[in-house]
Image (cartoon, rainbow, N blue to C red; front, side, top):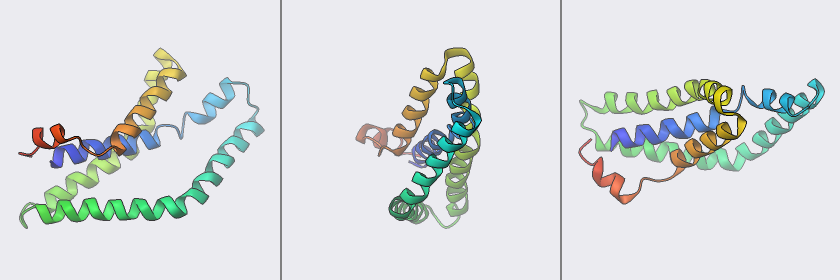
Length: 139
């Protein structure tokens, strides 16, 4: 189960972080001026700031629930390894998500990047299916 939670966590955070470095390039490729790019990024950040209030609370609850479930399901001797694996998957997703789209967009275009980013984020946010739980029950 730990491996599945780590993979989903990685996908969720990678999908969320993919667009930071790409959005200004995409806007400029579509004809936005430097001022326009700044306005687009500013609008994105304003919406994120306002949305972080209700969604941040929900996210905090989900993070605490996942962390608590992982910590209580592990033996005391394995608890550090379990929590370290979970934290590593989260921060690898944050760090590597930004790098993931460059090669994909270079070779297949922005459309493929949008699909990949959305797919990673949605799959990472989706709860595991029953067959996934059973397949990974021994982890």
